[in-house]
Image 1 (cartoon, rainbow, N blue to C red):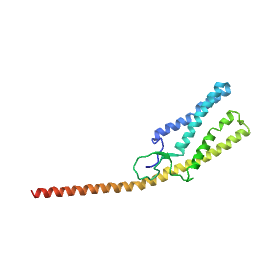
Image 2: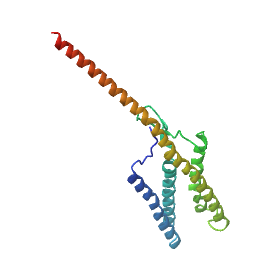
Image 3: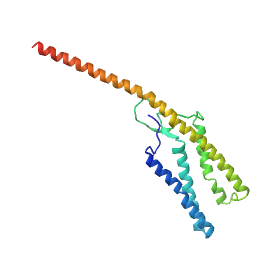
Image 4: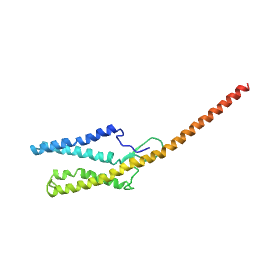
Length: 198
């Protein structure tokens, strides 16, 4: 079977993508309230909104942008249409799974690096802002590399696998049709013989 995303229908994928961007609105609003009226409740609301937004974006990175959990059969499988969930087998940048697990761990950490500023570990301005910007550039660079990898897997390897599977299915269909035709002729001959020799 060919790899497929958890949202195979384009409309559903677009809906979830829109929801991903919509998670930024509560974060912006609670951040505004946090500065306008500093309070423990506003701080908690801001942290909750940030956790929601970072978690959603992380899951989207792994599932949709990188396509890592995919069919265990991989590309070009010839064992029918059944597909068990597993780690994507077609990997171009690294052959081993370990770097991809490390990538997910680093991406998760950088998605939540804001906690260092919120809880006072690093100032949000000055050199602290510079550190955050450098880390974000590194995260986006890694994201882009593996996003391109997944796009190549879908556009190139999936199409090649589909073209490789199609002739085999056509050959099997022809064999079945020929077998049915041969069986039909044999049965007709037997019937004619029986009718001519009572």
